[in-house]
Image 1 (cartoon, helix red, strand yellow):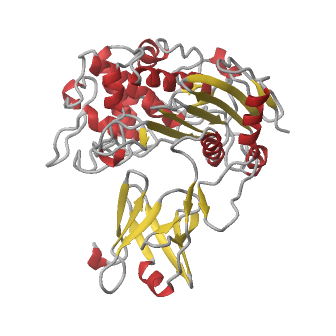
Image 2 (cartoon, rainbow, N blue to C red):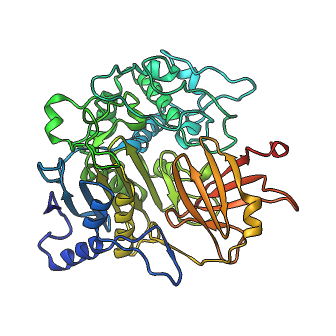
Image 3 (tube, rainbow, N blue to C red):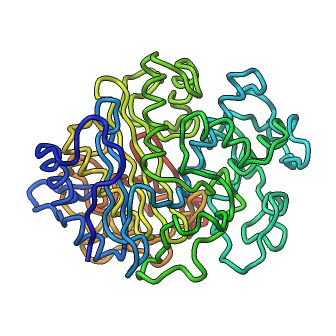
Length: 484
């Protein structure tokens, strides 16, 4: 059974306000898919049905409207068969830890203790980043922007009872670390490549520059000033706070064995938080953007943070919308996935000053992202709504030339032609690629990205390009020697 409760402070309207309640009920009545195909009915399951189908026991939501916290609400269970989700339920924020860490780094830049173009290794003391032959220096901006060329996409964490490595062991991939060494894998500044490893280097940098333990500095520099009283970077979660935390569940709806994983990679994945606390980050950035106040970052530094760099990514956040010419963007976002937790946060500047944070204790991110799309539709946001695609005509002869294996920076995509259908497979996950009308590209129904291919005049395709709103990622064909 899904519990429904009104939780926490609501500044712009009471939860008993019929108009507000109507809005909430419209949102949860039908979560839109990421892609709506013109002429086809959209699959809009309600929140409770989507949670049940994807084995997500609990959801916590905070919504910002016109720069103020409009409402918070919990749905479902913090622990199946136990207490319901409330506004105070703690979740692992997973990769949302990265933009919160970025605030602390940019505060040091603002205070003159770091520079964005600083050679990171020149400021590291207790560990050093091994140089790569022929590569330029890795700077702070590149690490924040994921354009420093560093390896290690993400981290699995450490189950309770297993040895947990030190930060130095994680950085060098030394046992008991379960991830490879963090190294320069491609020339810095040449391409966008998401790297949790880069933020782990930033964690060491913050420790070395400030002389403080990472959770202590984050509390002093960010969590305290923003009154994020429920949040902590402590790993593992202190014993006295375990009762506040949601139980994590895997994709099959089973509790993660031993409970929440431990993440010594705190900057990349270690934050415990609530939607209400993370909403404070969004509102603080909105206020600074508008020049009202600067609890952590000044208006100029916020605009630096939200100016697109390589990949259309900012310094900590992904970016959406905005004008041309590389200026600051009015919408920002980040998602996260840890063992048994998935979440997303998004905010808009400009006239709307809206935003939302959704945190869940299930592994399927489709619930959080679907709820974000429903909120964006209800509040008429300029971004984060489902996109509409028109279906083109299948071309089986062309599909045969596209089939093959393509090596992306961090994974491999197998493209499979089956008569008049085309599929993409990563590991055990397979999705259909649909021809996009009026183009040579393909679209997915499960994601807003499109897929293009580099095609010679004759013979097989030589490369595959995954295109999102701001980023193109190219994979060379791996099964045709002449294309290498």
